[in-house]
Image 1 (spheres, rainbow, N blue to C red):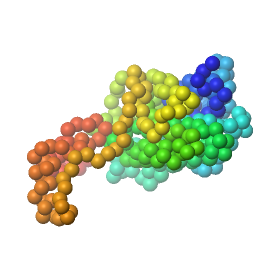
Image 2 (image 1 turned 60 degrees about the vertical axis):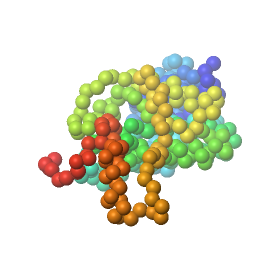
Image 3 (image 1 turned 180 degrees about the vertical axis):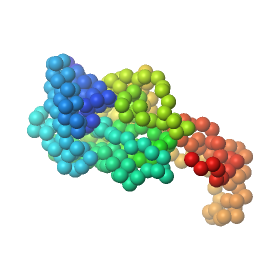
Image 4 (image 1 turned 45 degrees about the horizontal axis):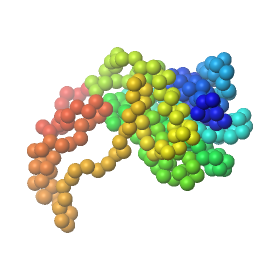
Length: 299
């Protein structure tokens, strides 16, 4: 028996890549799985794989970037399998453009699918779990892009929002026995192929098997993982690492508060003479702007 025997789960964006790996792993551990993907044929293909391996699964092609789609997805899980015990928010989309070229449509679509879809599916799932009195698990998907990445204002903003939702939901839902965690997956997929480096160009990197993110998701959805909530894990490849929560670090203090003249005097002394400003962006190069940020060549 697997660690998810008797459980029912939904996986959004489960037709390809990381989501497909989640579905296969959850089913292998005994869960009944609703495989969601807007491409119904891809969702059905994963369902066929699960069934061929002896598992239980059904396909769903609802658009989870809407309340209606989330309700359809969660409702199908309850109708088919009698309950819902896990929501895995994996679905995503990218529309990469530099900030000054990004359109309203680019912004709204990515935010709707990532942040909106996570919110709607998470809330609908949690409402059912509370009604059941069964507890359960929500596993969201973030990205290192939330640290800042060229051409991904929309995507990085959405992923940062999802991380913050994860921390908040963990506090609010613990009273109902619902744990909320997130993963930041390492995987080579169709979506990751569009990512750009700090120079704004695409680079061919090493290949990572998307299926290696599934086991930690299965563990977090299991009763054995019921002691873990409010955490973000870097997963995939050889790793399971913890992503530290944002926090305030070292600082300057002035009795009565800071005025402009005092800041003019002390800011360079404190932050510049002993270099300690935060690195900017995903690639964490040392802070490069102590000489000033000034207009230069237009790009």
